[in-house]
Length: 384
Image (cartoon, rainbow, N blue to C red; front, side, top):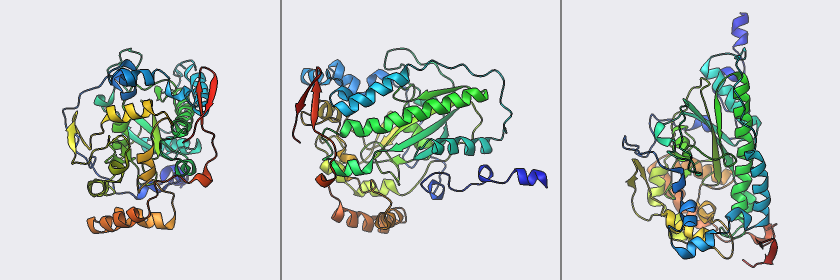
């Protein structure tokens, strides 16, 4: 009887843990977009912004990229200062004695997820770490040689009121991203440190210490979202308006399954992000196979070049802003989510209704930030 009582409570259930009902989504064996066996590991130095800075996209883009984007606007520069402090945290050793906690992977998975939500993550998922998701080299050129079994994946939303007030490509864009990145860095550091104190290996993967893995495949396998037309992962409750980090670990955990909420069919018929993209970087045609993944291939050169060369702002977030899924949990939007995930017919109805109400124009009555460009310690007033 006592043993039964000991196995009662939140750690032994399968209900909702976080702010969104992720447990109600349809789970499938494999992602809804094809993942082949021909995936090649990629070099962390080959990111679009790195290529822009190195001159791969031409001298004009290289010159524009010479001003490190977070330092271009004072709010994101201040956020980056804190990230730099986080990146200087000393690497902690794994405690040699294991903590006397349950070894049941199901219980530990619920425990770690609840810790993520305790630290204010919006969504937490778990997956096995695909070897193909590990970079060959870090951004600084160091080779990556890691061998962890599991990945704990953390997602944090961009602040929607600011997304709504923004034009999508003005001065607050980079700060919107760093607002999420900064919180994710703290969460990843805390969770990794905690797991090490329990006696298991762990490695935080965030903007603070740099990434040794590609995050999008982890988002797919951890059931946090599906591939969208924008070429990035979309979550049904956050839309495109989120950033992600991870903790790699050997603590025994149960992986989540990928999700299917009808996005492939929805994005096949919806072209809003592609139509509105100022750089024309988002595909208007069918999916292709790129490095073993089926996706609507984003033109990273166009996207990065536009963002780093933007004289009236920083990073572009317009695809985030116009996406019908990036909306608060109002009853109307919940009805849209229900319809979009129900059937092909109701998805078409949801798409038709959402296109009638989508606003791409900024809500200037909600604007709270100042348009200031910082260069060499001098501020210039700008107008967007």
